[in-house]
Image (cartoon, rainbow over all chains, first blue to last red; front, side, top):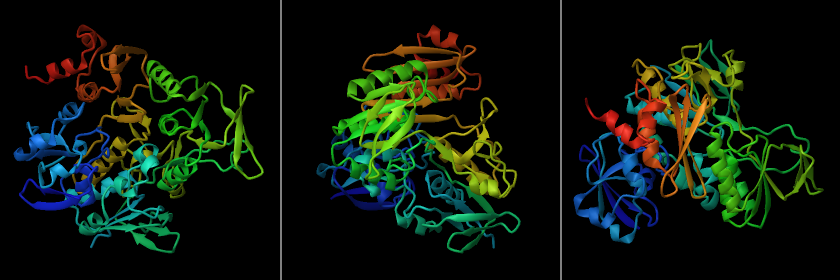
Length: 107
Length: 411
């Protein structure tokens, strides 16, 4: 299991233990973390699982997937260099302690 | 105290309505009633990931704690049998009476089983619920010769998965091309070539007139309208769906290819709304009554109804969009193209394909394969108040992303 820390737009912190191989969007939903909507269920058909990867973690998390950038353009909140679709971040042991900031809204 | 909202149906639309109501600050009770014995889940993965891995936790929309935390009462498995409009109550199969202030019909659709001799008698599969998908997965543990009746999204998504698992697949489609109801001819053709290359056999323009059933009750094959017979030991019926409208009709609400609602998703009874697959609503662009089977319609309808219930003024004007993952092809559709009188197919590098659909020179819909950027640009452009012309796209050599950017920039 890998620890992921979600920080909401108002500063609320939730730490969850997630299974390697799952994605960050799924970890948020499974642990009832508010702030991820994930309307398309991870098909990269929407931008309602938008998140900001903490700057200390951007290198470890890696680059955006093919097509992800295009979908991010329709995100409800500001898109920053650290923006990702959380459904495209696969959880692996190197990401233990990963900090994910959540935007104010997704729709 | 208000009796709150009762939602009939625990699909994605029902779930979204409950979630959106709480998000909008709605404080009265919310009760969801559904006949499947589980929490709301997503259906699109049933013909894809879930068919392979069977992970219910991976398709559940939210865990149980979400509903507790948000005071959303989920009553499952339970079936509403009667809507009493005069007393504003619903009655259930187990004898419950639930009062409501607002009732939302999110009853969805069910698989259509065509009236084909033998079909009722044989053990055949359909695909609408996790139970259906589990049955299919079990059946696929031994090598099969599968006949898929229907060449639409579900049938073809299933065919792609089954072929990749090493089974033999024949898809029988009564229309002359695949997905004829929802995509353009060039797109149908691309998918025909793709599925044939993957190894599926496609039979187009012929319908199944009889299913042969063995003594064991299992299907042995089908006879086609062109006289041919196809052998098989497993049949998936994927011939579309029918909206679940019986409760509404019995309650005296108007039904015409779905439960009829107005542009704020309200039936003629102001305390009853309908959403998603079961609702016939006025198309925001053409004004005609339409019914859509999509996650987008279900969730956008739900958000609209939630806003109306909390007292905001609403008109439903969302742009329809759809997707289908078949093997390595990701089909995305923005807008409704059925009324098109002209299609322009464009091929781009890296396997990206686009079909622009026009009516009288105005863009109606864009279909794309493996081209998320173009799809998103299309969704943006199709919402543009003055529309997009064939001329404007031609002038840019159909660079829709460039056109979307140009229209976005001020001035």
